[in-house]
Image: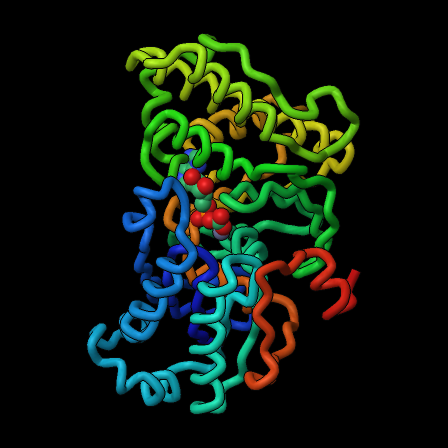
Length: 362
Ligand code: KG4
Ligand code: ZN
């Protein structure tokens, strides 16, 4: 099965061609193309929704054309190219910015009507999980096995889930306020670093001391797998206000101390979840999974457990938003195709209840 996938939930216009043989436990990425409007959002310190939708409309057809190995200008040949080489179409249905999502869903619904190819709708969050089911190198022989713990750390979500099978999700905990990536972005704004904040904070943190400032871990002592990052953000705000104007040294120390506490908070809950659900496999996904300090600390933490679970972390290009992971999600389980004329686009689309209601598997 060879499919064309499209993702437009935030500020990346992405298309990919991915495939999977029936007996293979991995997905292969043939082409993955991304046009990001992130630079245009820099001056706003976050994604400006109207700008994002306009850029998606501009980029969507050229990006799909490139994913199909045509030149970006060759969009008139799209339906033919799709019809010749592709067995199915998949698109992110939600959650995300509605104006952004609509560009992807409308384009793919139209392409499905024109070509008569089946259309699949995928939850963006499942894409972050299925990034770990992509074959990353020639030797990759062991995909994640069930039951597994899935840990999504992105700009919009922070979630711990147990999966007993493909597309069956049991929610253990999630953030009660800001997502981990959102906290990175907001603190980056306080420190006058650009958007997206994660990579900037991470780079600056290398030059600072992780012990310089004592910052709070949200819900540290509560018996829950939930997370909270808004208290941490407020503590950084106070620190910035008390020390303005910040020296370069202070900025680096704040970045390093902040990054340490975010990772402390994430690992604390993951560790507790592992005690309760001692699975053999952990899947990490989402933009914050690109954070080297998090990846290193998590690997070190797992090494010290009596029965270390296998950790699956996607390569950087499949941590942040892209279409290959959306395609990967559609190639497992028996997702039913949707009628393109009836395809709903959902700014809010809970991962757990959507699959409960739609596919009734748990
Ligand atoms: O998954 P993603 O691309 O989009 C959403 O689905 O939200 O995640 C974007 C988020 C942003 O908040 C960005 O600051 C964060 O991921 N991020 C990072 C890093 N790279 C991206 N956070 C920390 N360290 C990084 N290296
Ligand atoms: Zn994402």
